[in-house]
Structures are given as C-alpha cells and as structure tokens.
Length: 352
Image 1 (cartoon, one colour):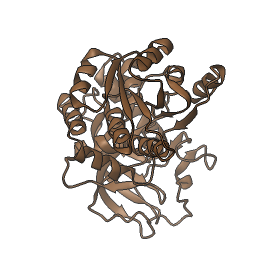
Image 2 (cartoon, helix red, strand yellow):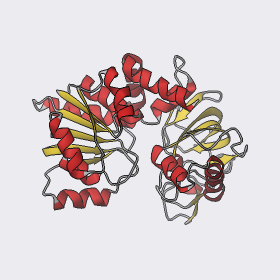
Image 3 (cartoon, helix red, strand yellow):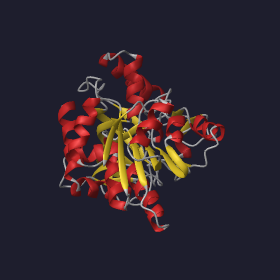
Image 4 (tube, helix red, strand yellow):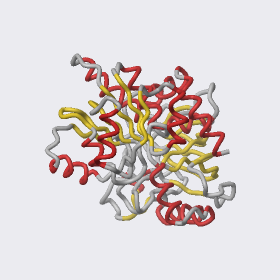
C-alpha cells in the first residue's frame, strides 16, 4: 500500500501534466496496481467502448478489426487509460474487486463483481492479455488486466438476475434514461405532458430514453431512426407513438419529419453517435423546449452557437452520465419493459 498523500478525485495518479489536471483531462495516468489507502483495484473482465469512440476507430481503420485492437492497446499502453484521443471518450468496464484500500468509501468488498460507472477516460487501466479474445469488431471487449477506482469513483454490484453482458450494456447508458425521467417529470409537474423526440431511438440509450419518457408521463413519443431496418425493429415494440426515418444531421429533413409526427418536440434527446446533429435537434425542438445531448460526438460549441444563430429559446443539457440512482432506474426499466429487454437481447445476439 502506498503511503504518499492521495486525492479522492485521483490527482495523485496524474503523471502528465503532473498535478495540472484531473484524471479525465490528463494525458497520462499512473496505472500501477499498487493502491493508495482510499482506492480499489479491479480485475478486469470486459471493457465496453463508448459508441462514438468505437465508431471513430472503426471508420479510421475501415473496419479492420486487428488494426482497431492494436490502436486500443496502444492508447492504453501510452496513456494508462482508455481515452480515444479524437473523441476524448472511453466507455466503462466490468470486473471483480481484487483489493480494497482500508480508507475506501465505496462500500465494496474483495470478490464483488462490479460495473464501473465512471468513464474509462479517467480510470487507470492496465491490459495484460493483448486483447487476444477480441476481434476488434464490437464495442464489447473481453479483456484481462487491472483497473483502479478512486475514493470518489462510482461502481455498482452486478445484478444476479441478469447476465453480465446484459447488465454491462444497460449500465453503459444508464445516465440517459435517468436524466430523461427528470426532465419529463419537470414538464409534467408544470402541467404539461410533453412531446418527446428521441434521435437514435432504436439504440441502447435511445430505447431506454423512450421507455423512461413514457414512464415519466410524456404525452407523445417520437422515435427517429436513420434506416428502415431500424424502424422495422422499433415499430413493433410500441415504445414510440410514431417512428420516423430521417437523417439526424439534416436540419430541414429532421425538423419536417418530427413535425409530421406530431412535433415540434418539447423535449429532444440526442443519442446519435455521429457529429452534426446539433442544429437539426434545435430546429426540431419547440421554443421553450429542452434538448438533451447524450452523444459524445456532440460539439457543444456548435450547439450553443447554433441556438443563438437560430434565435432558438431552448434549454440545452449535457448528459454527463451521472444522476443519483441512475443504474437502478435503468435496470428496472429493462426488467419492467419487455420491449426494451428484447431490443437489448437482440443486440447482444447479433454481436455474438
């Protein structure tokens, strides 16, 4: 156990620039397995790369899985964490608690199987297996190595009634339905049943956001997808009152499609893992409405300047991935909404 002073937010692990940045903003972390007293070491089982990061790597290497795997290994070896240098994002992991420092406030015990609910972009990480079991073609990465949680990190024990892969898939996006629940409930408390449009509605965060919006009292839900194949998956679920096919990067195309489905939206939720959706989302949202940007592909300067340029009186929220109780809420939505569970299990089967 190390005895030098430590910080609950991980400043002591920053090696470049030393002492000048929090772990997420730092370029390099000390990922050594020896703990400070308030830390927890995890034996890694699976990484889950965030969608924007995986898409960028796949497109960069034109679908060459071996090249994607090599770059992920290089990033972790160089930076001591998995942080895509282009998107700035990471993902999350599941594993087993190997050691708990005597001053850790996280309430974990050696042997607990957990999902980390903080980004890989700030989690000290070492990989020891060369990712030999991963073909580089899916977001879910079988892995062996160690990760470290700080005193102010977040982790959740894996539920016993769900497979680890299914639980990981839900927990990876659990911040989305939690914030949607809060925003829709605020509208309902002010006396309105809002129209909610979800961009990327057939995906993980999108389908959970639709379920959360309905459970919180949305008056109408609109699911926006880019292709007929995704529309065909979403329509039978009943999660959306209307399913529309539109390019979320097309300002007029998106706004017209949402309007035809009963919009503009009072709440627009952006769960699309490509850039260029900022201003289209603004045009699809009613004056006085709210836009929640969950995609790590979002340019927040483009969103802010776009709203100004369009004279749009909208509230724009950054989905930061943490809302108190977010993991339990998302897992309960999965358990209680067969349509959502079916979409998630179909996705798992397709990846397998």
